[in-house]
Image 1 (cartoon, rainbow, N blue to C red):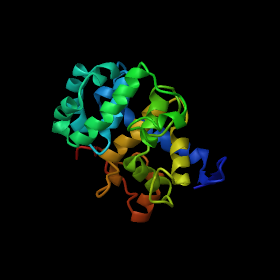
Image 2 (cartoon, rainbow, N blue to C red):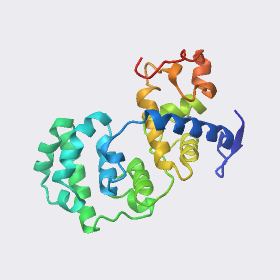
Image 3 (tube, one colour):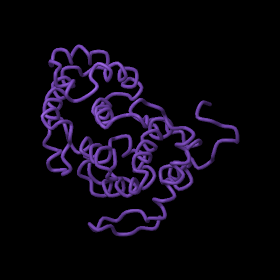
Image 4 (cartoon, rainbow, N blue to C red):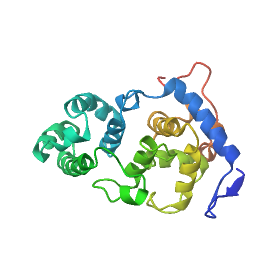
Length: 242
């Protein structure tokens, strides 16, 4: 792949390579993207940020079955702040990690209620809020403030590393190469859709143990597929359900 230097001096894939990846990915997403309550056009910023918090260390399908009832009971940061930590623990028991979730969300909800539901725009101020690290800060900047930010977790990292090349550092939060590639991939007007598309590709096709390269929409230029000898595509008529 052709390379270029970004502003920080990190060598990243060319705009052409990233553009091709994004184009093929979005075309696939239109047909195969998953549907969740927080992705609906009617979803509020509160619902989208809440979903991202709950999705950490929990499968999307599990959160999706729990989410509508929880949002109906607590439709805003203000209503969530009125709940006790014990109430929240009971609510979260069906999806696990209930003590941790209850404590973290209780603190954040109280902070957001005082802020009247408005998140700050500056990353430095976001990341000192209760339970808000780099990932949730990125989600806030994208959903609430319209910035092109990556929802970079282990699943997105797996897709990007397999396609473009591996990172150097163990912790994805501090790896300059992976952070730069992720930002470039989601840059533009479709940041939200690109993020969701990458995460869906990771869940449905580019699985950790058994990647389905034969039905991958970006396999032709994928470094991992080339190294694994997986470039042969599925016969016509193949689908994700086969």
